[in-house]
Amino acid sequence: MVVAQTTTTPLCGRLPFRSLHKDDFNPNPSFLPARSTPPSSLAAAAASITTVPASSLPAVQTPAQARVDILSESLPFIQRFRGKTIVVKYGGAAMKSAALQSSVINDLVLLSCVGLRPVLVHGGGPEINSWLLRLGHEPQFHNGLRVTDALTMEVVEMVLVGKVNKSLVSLINSAGGTAVGLCGKDARLLTARPTPDAAALGFVGEVARVDPGILRPILADGHIPVIASVAADENGQSYNVNADTAAGEIAAAMGAEKLILLTDVAGILEDRNDPDSLVKEIDISGIRKMVMEKKVAGGMIPKVNCCVRSLAQGVRTASIIDGRVPHSLLLEILTDEGAGTMITG
Image (cartoon, rainbow, N blue to C red):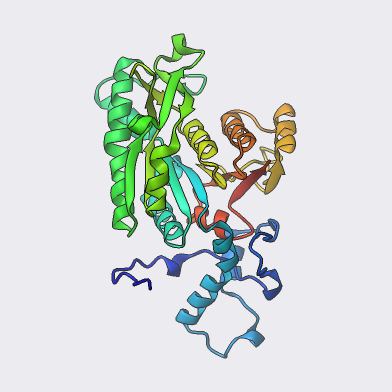
């Protein structure tokens, strides 16, 4: 018998599920409907959440009944992902906005409560920049990566491991979850090595090895690991590891069902100049063709490469989603529309 806690948070009232038609329900959760064309606007999406055929409802539907209907419609998705590991890389606008941060935290706690096993991997670039400037040290970048000298490495570790990580742990705990803060150094979760461009980048590291042993008992006990992307090499030297890369390698090592990268864009666009050309779903060969055709360029290339590498190592799907949309994690996992681009193997 499971006894519910007496303290609850008002998560369910804000769940952004659309109203499914009865024909959409599939009692076999292994065969969920393919992604459908997204609504033309957020307003249309909101309308689809609350609009159901009048003939199927009493004259007046109470808020409680509407909430129950929404929860029941999510059942196939919960069944599909229950007990599965979902690795989420957290950063960008979703980290800078208090409202979006609250949305992500609540989504993680809800997913954990219904039986999924979320793992949160984070960076913290803006916070690092702020502290470097306080110390009179101008942040430097090379080919989009932070140049990490000895002082910068010290600040990176203090900010990511000591400040950002513990702040996220506290927020998850306050929302009703139980989080465990880690970095790549803990239990040798991540072993780093210098990048080939070490002469220019300094202590920026690649992931040489992942040992996920520390994560399995944490997840089995229903806790949420929160991982800062700092690691050490075999000699104990600290390295700043790209959070996207760390998330992808951890997802592969865990045999995750899904890797999700929260970004500041809608996803992958067929035409970079047309925000309405979102690619909802694509396979590895298709995404490689888009890279060759230069439809994917700039900062999106390392994210795509991270997704492709994780898929090649056994992750089922990898998604690049819009972290600026409230509850984008729930939209991606518990609806068939998703919240960005899903890449499949």
